[in-house]
Image: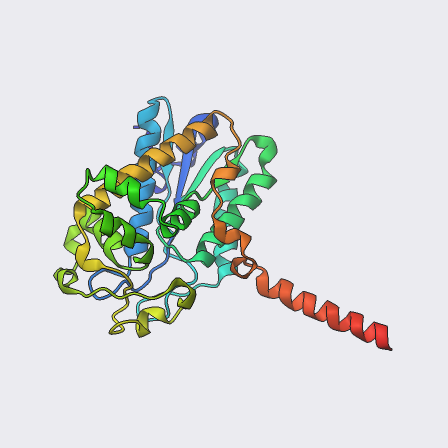
Length: 308
């Protein structure tokens, strides 16, 4: 079979795969509260489903290709501060993702894709930083490690996916619902729809009666989920969820990833396509506090030297 599970392969079976026609899929997402109606594994289920979808699309486009699915790494950063969320430092996520990618890049695997179901800017940027590091380090071997879900998330919150989803559902997603997507931040209509499609038995029936909970993005913080609305841990419109919306979203992502991997296999530099807008904001960078502290110390030292 052209789709392989990493943990089921021997090292020799892995080593025999063609480096130029094999994609390595690394799902990395945290355990995090997702309201009273979705499980704490929501982001991980999404990351795994996207990895499997990406693998299937990759080999469907060319049966001579291979895809290797790594097990989920259930870790992430910038999780909402609430019971059920597992918090890991941003730097740890970056270093972990770097080490995972390097484990394949050093042996010549060229196409490494991190899949992610967690939309927090700090987590997205940590993964992008790790991918950039491995790509730079192994560029001479033709390696590209990418985390393409950051740009998708930032475009989602900028309202760019609404029209596409409405078209994909053939109008079942109304224009009003599409317009609400940028405010559907956490465990709302979008994520509930995804799990209704992927694992409906894990969705609590109370989602149908949950009222909308909205919060301006500029007010968001790690405690937002426990203070917004009734403090149930969601932000958005869960009652509007439909399995068909989740299915349509997966189809959209599948096509986008298939096209991205085609370009990677063709040897095209895709770096311009796999960076979110979050990476341009210094506060979201992994080394922000260290750089800020270093700059402050340098300023103090300069002032002291000037006046001594």
